[in-house]
Image (cartoon, rainbow, N blue to C red; front, side, top):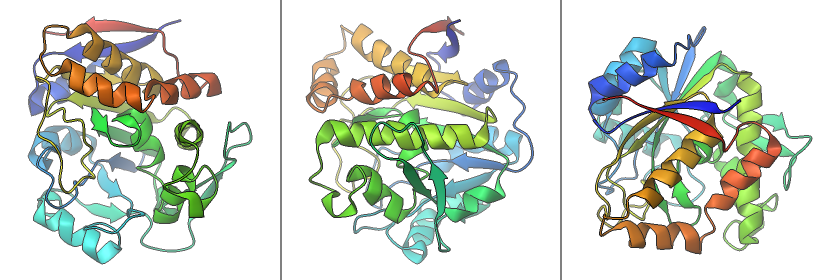
Length: 289
């Protein structure tokens, strides 16, 4: 059976909530809402006001984890200050999930490259998760979407280095590239399994730069905004986003974004995730006006 993905070309906070309701998915208990807080200096990340209606509807807690590289989010104190500057703390309860040690270890017995995932310990305080992703390019992964949010996004600072190094933290920036992409898929599978179906995904194709929101100095968006997608399948929603980029043949910025995605073999993360079986590349797209 094909996974369901809902899509709208209208990009507003109200439309995000409307599409979310179409999934008819009740996230139980305490909800972790994974966002990207945005590196200080980044101009492209999606602001708190954009997510406010949806996060308010779920009653969730905005969660993040610290970075593995130097910047405005590499310690809990600096990260919380960045979230304050970016308006998150004024709008929502905030939890930096790896603020306390030791990390929570998730097993990945069928992992392609790694067999452990090190995530923020506070993950165990939540019963379900809402993954809010800004779909765009990425300097290393080629693109960033739901799978990256599940993997690098939920990983602790140490866990991020572990994934990047495909299990060898000292090789954080030098590991075999496809092994890094497969490690992202491995890590994402462990978080999806942890919540056992109590998880939903929103991808927003807006402000699509070739660079990630983790870049303090990022290129301006190169493609026109495309829309909002929601699904209960992280593989399907990322595949649908890629397909929409390929379909935007009249967009003069398409070639630039595709060069970033293809030169980093970005689709391989999706291929690996599908192989692991926690999602499908086959989907049914329902467009909502």
